[in-house]
Length: 78
Image (cartoon, rainbow, N blue to C red):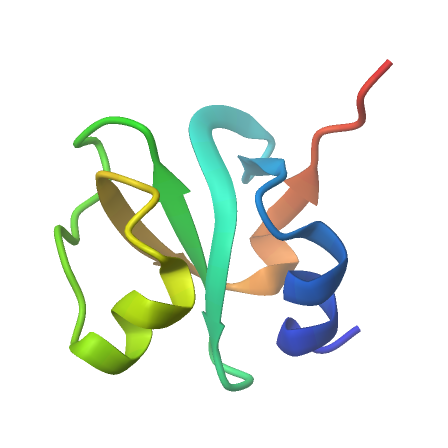
């Protein structure tokens, strides 16, 4: 699965990072390099992006972080 396919399939869904719940949501992607994780608080290390990326994310989250796709796992709703 590519980053774009993962993003389109799971946008806004909560994910585990390296098996841990860090309060992250799928918020975007950078080509085939990274998935952008969004946080409801300021625990992410990035506060803002350029205007091009910001429009994609819509300013929904308070902070962000980059992650490799292979470290992520979508939290299944039961």
